[in-house]
Length: 311
Image (cartoon, rainbow, N blue to C red; front, side):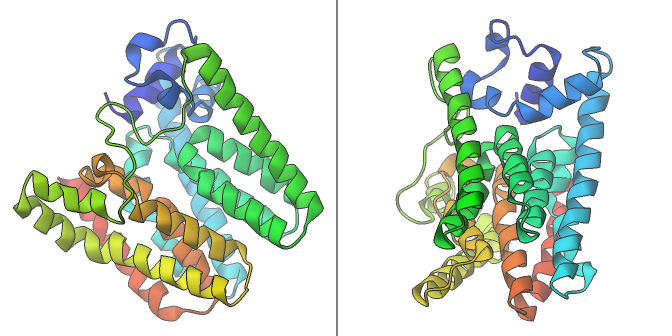
């Protein structure tokens, strides 16, 4: 199976005692409970409607997420065309049609950031908690928001974000007690684990084929790897100057996540662009906040990666 099928299985019957045979890694898949539960609720549990509500949730979530991202772009005085980078990012477009949780998770995360910039920290914490319960890959967003609040000595914001972190921890404990293991990990069947050497996940492709590695480097070096390296260097440079900002933390954590992705993610183009979504969002937000027009203009070329959907 693949992630979309697992979402479907959970939506059809979320009973923890029944779901085991349908998932390759039960706690890992089940931790992404938000998307299938919402689709099931909208279908009133009717099996024939669930495939349609899974699609409906993703279409609406991606539309709302793009609207929220446009709000962020224009809030800081940039043309709304740069929101197309988010709206037409291949990792999200593919996820919409394949019943994957990213559109809903990133819609919640972008909404959380909008509320955070409006100093509505309770709503920001609430949406971010929902985001990580939809897709655990949004944890760098939660960590960035918490680190920013702590750095600013914002007691109210830090308290609400810590409450959300406790809620996520309680969910992980429930998974451990119910299924025998925590949900956090780097993948389901075939997971190769995190790499400790930067970009080793990419270079391990050479063990299978140098030609395939060459194709991956040609496609993903300029679109994923180099932007992640630039983001990491830029965020570290800002931190050394003593500047604390949400977008700086977002860029650092999401870029680092790409650099250390496992081989099992790098070898799957769709998995790679899905996991790179956080880096794309963070880089655009970082550039928007700092009037960095060149990264924004280069970012428009990310739209060309939609060609991957033609394979």
